[in-house]
Length: 111
Image (cartoon, rainbow, N blue to C red; front, side, top):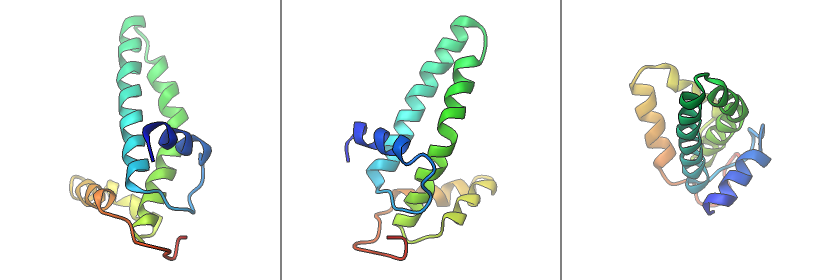
């Protein structure tokens, strides 16, 4: 999946928490949100109000969670594991390792 397809998939599966997302879809989504957030920070700095960043984050919070849950599904893990991010440092490290690992070959319990 290329960059454009990943962004399109992220927005078209806005609240789809039931399928699978491969590594490229997840990491291209992360790259897209990081780049857009940086641009939004620059725009907000120029106008002096945090409007652009806030609107962008509101527009991408649900698709970001959805693609993360679908990525966990691709590694044959429940989406509830996303709550590991609540554990400082350790949870983030574990999730990054899982998000970076290859998905299961063929069908698994999530599709």
